[in-house]
Length: 195
Length: 148
Image (cartoon, rainbow over all chains, first blue to last red; front, top):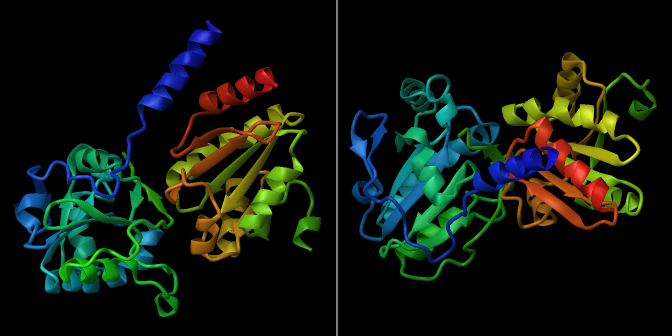
C-alpha cells in the first residue's frame, strides 16, 4: 500500500511537468483567442507583424514584474520599430478571479501606464503550450514564427541604472535588421505562474 | 551577532552561490541536503515551508534543510519569519541575481519556489520546480534513506 502511495505521488509529480519551447521551435497556438484589457479578442496571429511577435508572460503582483515593468513600454516600442508585434499575457489562472482578473489587469495597466496589449490566458493554456514557468518570461519569434530568444528582459531587474546587457532590446534589434540574435537564451528570477 | 540569537529566534544570514555549494558539500557522507529557494512574496513558497520545517525536525538525523531567501531586503525576511512564528534559519542571497542563477543547475529556470535535494553521497535526488506537498517531500526523503 505504501508503495502504491509512493508510485501515485511520483506519477502525479512527473505528469504535471511540461517541456519548455526550445530555440528554433515554432510558435504554438497562434490562433488561440484571448481577451485583451481593451475589450478586444487577440491572438498571436493577430498581434504578429512582418518580422515576428514578442510574447511576455506577466501578471499584476509579482515583485519581479513590478521591478521590470517600467521597461515594458520601451520594449514594446522597440519591437514595433523593428516590425515585431508585442503581447503581454497573464496566465495566473488560480488568481483570475482575484488579483489577476481582467478587471484587475485593466486597473494595473492604467496605474502603471502600460501602452501594450495585456491579455488573459484562460486556464493557462498558452503558458502550458510554451512551457512558460514564471513571470516575467520572454519568448521572441521571428517572421517564420520560430523561437529566436527566450529568457530575461535584461540583466538587472532591481537596478535599471546598472544594466550591462539589454538582452531583449538587442534581440529585437537583431531580428529587425535580419541578423542572428547574439544571446538567444538567458535566465532570470521570477514568480512561478499560478496555474 | 545575529547568529548568537536563541534557538526560537529566526536567523537570517547572507550567503552567495559558492556558499550554497559549500554547505551542500559539507554534508556529503552525512545527511541528505534539501536546498529550498524562496521569498516572502512567493505564496507557493510560503505554503510549503511549514512542511519542510516539520520534515527537518522529523528527519533531523538524516536531513539538512537549507533555505535561501531572494527577498529584496533582509529585514523584511526577518520580520516575515518572526510574524509567522517559524523556528527557522534562512540564508539571504547577497549576490547579484544574475551571478547566483548562473552558478545554479540548468534545471532552475529562475521561477520560485525551486528545491534541490541531494542524497547523502552527494548525488542529486531531485530538482523540484513547483510547490510540493508534505507527502511528496516525505516520500523522496524516505526513498533516499532506504537507498543508502
